[in-house]
Image 1 (cartoon, rainbow, N blue to C red):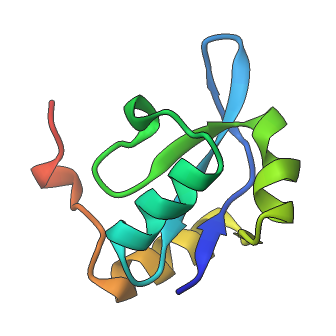
Image 2 (image 1 turned 90 degrees about the horizontal axis):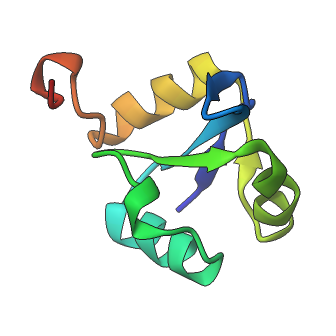
Length: 89
């Protein structure tokens, strides 16, 4: 399994956010998130939203930094991507 994180470019709540995903298993993604104290509420169907200041800690824990397009490509290839049409409104 590889846990991937993209660049924090998504503004919300006065900070920038990145996405954390797995390229193989939601169970392993959730385990990584628990080990790194990410709150369950930050999970959004197929990824965790993580604030910019968490990146150094998550990278040190083994997350692989990739660009946003690569993150989405690998998430889709894993079969874990929730299509936009299936996301909650």
